[in-house]
Length: 434
Image (tube, rainbow, N blue to C red; front, side):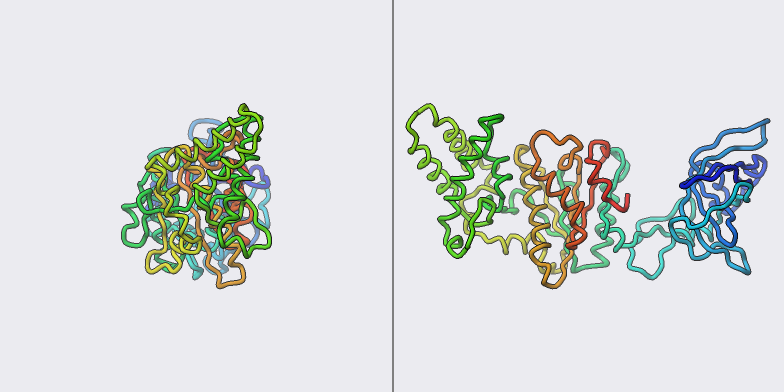
C-alpha cells in the first residue's frame, strides 16, 4: 500500500497509494480497513522482521487521488513466519530499522492478535481492542503494578468505571491481595459492596496520634511566616512531652515527635499550658493560645470526631493497619476510603497518614511474608500538584516517595486524574502504564 520515505528513531514518514487506501477501506477485515487512516496500524518490512506502527497524521501529496504522506510512530516488532509470512512473536521496542524505499503493508486481524492478545503470564482483560471484534485487551498484572500506573482523561470519559473494572479484575485474580482506594467523592462504594470494606467518617476511626510531626503542624499550626516557625517549635516540645507520658514510651531508647506513641489531647494541652506558665511576659502567650484554641476546636467539632475523639487514644497501630490494609483479607481485599465527609482543611492530612502507613508498613515488614499493597488515588492532582507551594506538602512528599521507591518494597501506586497537567511531572513519569 506504500513505501518508506524517511526513518527516525521513534517513527517514520511513509508514502501511501491513495487508490489502494480507498480499496482496502471496504475490506471485510476491520483492521485492514482502518490501516492507513489516522489511529490505524501499518507494518513495514525489515529483512525477516515486521515493524508495527501507528498512523499519527495524513496529508495529500500531488494530484487528487494520488499519493498520501503519513507520519507514523513505531510500536514494536515481530518475526515473519517462513511459510505464511505472517507476524509472530511480537514484542515492544525496535531492534532493526527498515531503509527508505521499504514496502508498507496493512495490518490484519491476525496481526492484531499477535500484538495485543495476552500470553500465559498473569493478566486481566479489560475490553476489546478497536477495531477488532474478538481481540481482548489485556494488562499484565506484574508489569501494571510493578511500575505503577495512571488513568488519565477528561471528565465523563470513564476513568472511574475503568478504575473499578481494573480493581475488580485484580481482586478476582488475587482475592487475598491488599488494595487501598482513596475515594474523594464517595462514588466507588456501590461498586465494591461484595468484595470491599467501606470506610468513611462514621467508621474510619483513624487515631490522631498516628500523625508524624509534619502532619501535626498542618493540622494544629494556623499561623504563617516567622510566627509559624515559633508555633512549630512550641508544638514540637509539647508533643514530645505528651508522648513521653505513655507507658509505651518507657521502653524506647529514643523517643521523637514522629514516634507513633499514643497520647491524650488533654496531655498536649496541659503541656502547652505548662510551657506558657514559664513565660515572663504576657505578650508572649499568643503562640500558645493559638495552639490551645485549635486543639479545643478539633475536640469540640463533631466533624473531626472520626480522628480526634478521645476514645482513639486506646486504639493500637497494629489494629488500625490490619483493618485498613485487610490483613487478612477475608474475601474483601480492597478498602474504599471515602473522604467526601472529611473536613476540607484536613483531607490532605488524612490521605498523607494513610499513604505513609502504606509505605512504612512495607518497609517494616520486609523480613516477613511479602504482602504487596496497591494504593489508588482518585483526583491525584489534589495530593501531588505540580505547584510545590501551599498546604498539603506532607501528602505530596509521601506520594512522591512511593512513586520513586515503592516498587522496591512491594507498594504499587495508581493515579487517576482529569488534569494531568496539574500533576507533578516527577510522579507521572514514574508510571510505567498510562
